[in-house]
Amino acid sequence: MGSDEKNSKRTISDKILIKQMLKYLFVHKKLMLIALLMMIIQTIFFSLGPYMIKIILDNYVTQGRRSEFLIIGFLYLVVVVLRIIPMYVQRWLLLIVGEKTIHNLRRDTYEKLQDISMEYFDKTPSGDSIARMTSDIASIQPILSGEFMMAFSSLFMVVGGLIVCLSISLPLTLLTISLFPVIIIFAIFQRRFVRTKWDDYRDYNAKYIASMAESISGARVSQSFARYEHDRLDFDKLNEKYYKKGLSAFRWSSIFSPFYETYTKLTIVLVLFVGGSMTLQTQGAVTVGSLVLFILYLNSFLEPLMIIAGLYALIQTSFSAFERIIILLDTPLMITEDLDAQPLNCHSGKIDLNNVTFSYGEGESMVLDDFDLSIQPNELIAIVGETGSGKTTIISLISRLYDIQVGSIKIDGQDIRNVTLSSLRKSIGVVLQDPFLFSESVRYNLCYGKEASNEEIENVLNLISAEFVYNLSDGLDTKVGERGGWLSLGQRQLISFARALITNPKIILLDEATSSIDPQAELRIQRALSKMLENRTSIIIAHRLSTVRAADRIIVLDKGKIIEEGTFDELLAQKGEFYSLYKLQFRHEKN
Image (cartoon, rainbow, N blue to C red):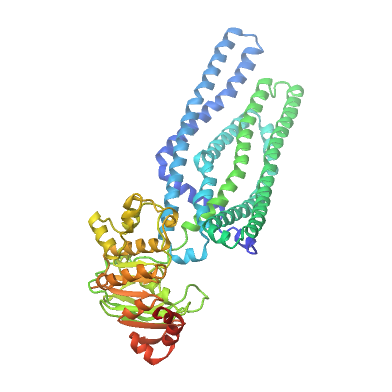
């Protein structure tokens, strides 16, 4: 929590935010131009009303011309009714523009999260990203759905009303304008102070969603350790701060509407007092009709001014949320394709890591430093080592989930940075330690990387002895629940294993892929491995004796360096690091 103030500091100016917002809105410029035309027509009708009242007062009411008064009164009623048509069309068009803009913003945010590098997710809580996709976009929806353009509409009325007021009475107009600095100073104060409050509130909204997401996903662990009381206290502290930030933001925002209301009424009273004095003391200088007309037009631009002022607080709220979205959208993609990137021609599956240096971020320690490894086509490599030695990093780099800082990684002689990402990843089948499944059917998860026929699915399931799928309630169409929670851990692992094989990749990367499967199920898999890995280059990170023994070559890592290399028997004979690991981790399996 110590970084709250730092995190809430603004990094994007209002000018840039408005430019970005208009860029999204102007995608629908035809609709906006029609809406703008409706605004102009509405403003003309709006301006006609008060002028017609002046005519009624000066030319008909004061002179007792009843018949003409009824005619002009009827015309005034027609103007008022006609004003409704452009007002409705304008608002309907702006709602369409707003909803389309929000639709596009959701799409762009989702696509950005799909394309952004793993480094972003390593440093950003998932709840923060969810907050940007949900509550932040919801916060800017009112502005984009009409209020933002209402400010322009109100601006038209302000300018139109001010021009008419100048034509009626220059002294009264100058008196009104002389009061403008009060509202300008107040608006500047509002912009600088309230925006900070809303920035703080949005930050805590993200922390709140992140906490909720973590609590839900970690509910099993929390209950297993009987931590619910402690977690509840932590949540209460966060919720209390979130509440106070929200209360502060709303409290300061609510001050301004009464201020503008008071400012408007006092301005009208002052003009009425001065204008009334001019009417009484200076015969003919300002007629009663002109004074009433001036006050009506004064109200016609003070009222829109109040609308703009009221929207200003809402705009600041929206800008605070919009800034967070723009920061996400402007986050540079660390993993990109060259414009002339070619599809990977993975014909044999040879992998070469040459002088590879890599760390997970600036200032972080090197995970791999001047690392070299060559894997021959169809070779089965097992990588072992203590936690943090760089095993999983190698798999991530070959899949190009991260980019190396120095050196090169080549597959069949092609630098993976020079090939298309889709062709690279379609050539590699990956099974991670945490078997993530989508909350859809078994079939959906199996075919996630490639659309497959029932025959193809059946062949793969039989190959890895995963026939249990057909015993599920709906077979391949059985829903697996969130993260596959309706299946056992071993079943989830088998499905993720089959998912990788269905794409028929030339390279297979298994990150401790059999660690969650019971020995009996693993035995069935081991029998199929020899057939499954034929004509494929395979890298396996495993702790089980059977998998390591079957490898053509074993690589022993320590702090990102290869300290031993050889076959199972060769490494045991050396009685080095692998021998120590074997004694600690593998010997019980043999027993």
